[in-house]
Length: 435
Ligand SMILES: *Cc1c(COP(=O)(O)O)cnc(C)c1O
Image (cartoon, rainbow, N blue to C red; front, side):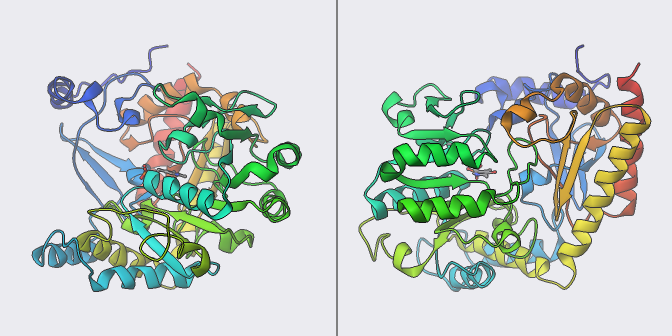
């Protein structure tokens, strides 16, 4: 039952011991501690193209992509050259630079409903600021979110669901004041009647509905037909704002956001991850009238010492310019779809129930049976099996997210060889799971 790897990684082990004496739990972000899969974290020496190289001399095909940022592959030479040029001109200005508008123009040209943007440094900051803006614009305090959607570690959004019926939020973390958590209402993802019921009661107090339009923090879960357009109409009816958290999906599933695919225009879009190409960049965007309520044009205060950092902006520009090339998302989608279906075939050859899905550079993988529509469905998947699979794959040179609740990410650097390697490793690992 112990999922731990059978391969010794002495350099990783000693680095983790050292880190654990300094860093809380040995890590800078909790998922890296491997709690969900057991075993000890593997330390990285470098990442290049589709590959991870660890400190013990092992190579892996990467399907984490630094949680979605690495859309063009790691250390792409064009991006690195741009970063080096930008860095040589100064690491941080704390003043205006041309690159802010240049990155902003690229993003806004791809997000039709938005004509003003504010850059921040993390997705958490983007969601926090979007919520503050929604509260200011509506004069209301409550927010409705969905079980299984993650919007960063913002107090009011760090609330998961009770199972089933709508519940007043219960904090998901110590240190979140109960009053703050109680301002958050939780609905079931893909359950429009649930949302309608909550809005009928609480609508006049709800500043915003915030949602991942294509969920990526409970595996990859697609919205059912009519779900997002239904949220749009409910927001319109009740005078609430619709916030689409596209921090994963923007420029990951297509040029622009998932909103370009589903045709639902939000009041505020949150972006992150891919738009920084690996440096800390996130943003929120919306109509000019709404966004100009933010300081310095309006009364909603929001600022950042490192926001619009010149090196980070240059990295985002160089990354998006590679994504903008003809056929970029089509070939990414073809690659991830091929991988998803090859894995499904391999699992079914071993009679293992597996649900896979793919869109652009996102892939879903869950040991369960369809349909997977919400957090409870995903919770019902076999996460112990995932833990064993994770280690079997790690030992065969595949770098997966260390939890069954995560989306997998491919990049433009994933070629036939790296995809074939993943499929071979998975076939062996599936066989092992049955023994
Ligand atoms: C990663 C993520 C965030 C938080 O972004 P950070 O940069 O980690 O703070 C918010 N929303 C979604 C949908 C995310 O996937």
